Length: 263
Image (cartoon, rainbow, N blue to C red; front, side):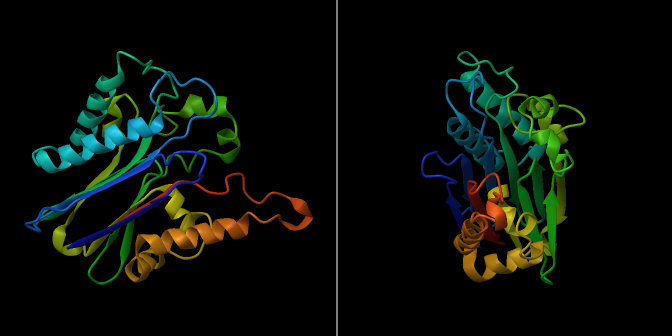
């Protein structure tokens, strides 16, 4: 069993709001991977004095510790408890009812000798590779179903944030954990696991360089660093002015994180 990980900030002027962890016990009997993508708030108040990196570090730390120490809890129960624990850490100093209170997307996997459990909330991704080489992508597509024209409006996006008919993130409400995409797979049916933020999945869903299986092939051959180098090269090429001087894409680079574990 082995694991590799890499993360890159989207900008040298801003802290990386992604967060990752991998826990592999020395016994080799199981493991955990956790990836969070902190939601960058627009300019203006969000009710919190701490900021997104503070939030993702605490939520990620709680998820990792609970995933390892509480095998009796399901992943939704662990996410719910981690959200509550993180909210309690700044409930007295911050307005957690603010729609833009610090929040994050989540990709979480845990395995033992019998099963592989998975949980995804919002636009992070988990990829499960079977012994025959096939790849299953575990995705929460609710954000992707929101029309692009709505997402261009901050007010319209806020009306759909953590609301029925919109999309959900891990923020301050523990009940959102019940809305995550979850499931289990027999351990014998999974050879490797990858957890990625949307900055890394751009290789597939923005730049169309291949399928999820092709992305896993890149991880097998070049590791997470190789994948992120490929994404950055594509972003840099795409940032060049289009014919007529038009801007190709609003966001040149994004925080990008990938964790790859061979079971």
